[in-house]
Image 1 (cartoon, rainbow, N blue to C red):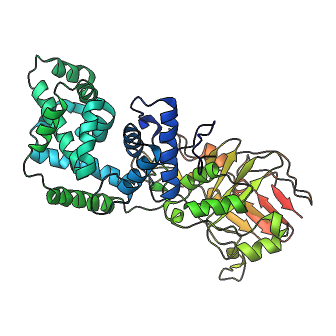
Image 2: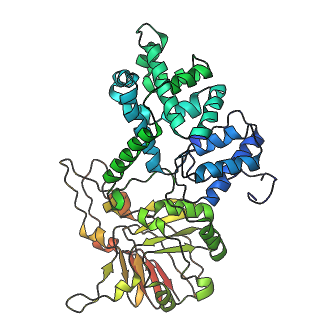
Image 3: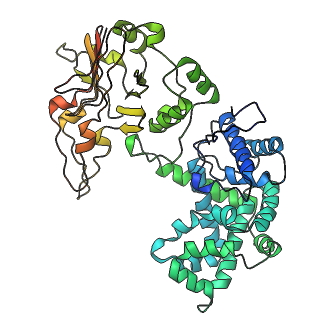
Length: 476
């Protein structure tokens, strides 16, 4: 049990997805202290589901635990996260990127060392170096220096980190301006990024001198920093107005379900655990993660009739179909379009056979975690920058009529289900061949046979997932 007890669990505590495992710095905490830090961060993630990316939250928590008990540490971190007047901790991937770009812009104007850094960076480029700016402070500085910096940070906000980062650049420039110095040799031999990290770990000045250098930088007011920050944020947002599968997701899970929704899912579903929910949520289209999940249909409560399935589900868009076998395997499909579309007719009065969009995908959560997206999402561009065409047979996403439901397809089928009246499925899982064959690196588009691209079908007697020579069926 993680919450509601002072006793630490025997098993490791699952950290929220916004934490980066490579930056879970403990600052010499004991094993018990690390477990307490894990619990504080875990509770924060549970209580603040709007935090989607905040790698600096864990090390700051660990530093506070050196000076206060767990309860006070939690309240302090909750206050920092909730602060509106001053920014202390970035909580999204976008704002994290805005901060390092802000440091880069400020450094170009207020520190001549920035030009020196650009010259030394060479082919690496300054962007890659500035991207790690906060780890100069949180990961590399000696602990006595870090404590003094954090003392100012808790009073002034993130602008203290900006000043300290500029101070590090100024001091680094001072110690590398001489080509005969050891730090210049280090930068030319192992790269500037490695040299700065080593320079911070072996900081040649005292904490007092570091802070004096940081706060002696003039014309660096909060208003100026705010203007640069807002301008940078607007620029990045304008560049990110892209849609569909081309949107690159962060390493964390964006817009995780709220804590209440997590509880609801645990109570309503025996199929999905919270850990599996986090995994599945990271695969959904970004805009869909803004919604909270609602359980529409379950065989435990609503029975096994496809008619009931359609009545309860067909007007909702999108839907997640999740199946758990008697062997505890969990897999399913993300269906991007309403099942009611199966009744739509064309201009000739014929019902359309297939519907859906390229956002439809298949997935497996246990025992293996895998996502099988539409091949068109990964086809990419040709050598001349032209979009590679996807075969027509690879654009048939969902199908349903009075006899079956189909989701996915390929010569090796996404899922094979053979249900009896008691809904005990046979054990077998296969990825869609289109995900494996089409768009291979160095090859053109490999056409998938039409019969292998039939994805979903359904009627009042069965559900079909997969297509081709063997049909995956769910029957009464």
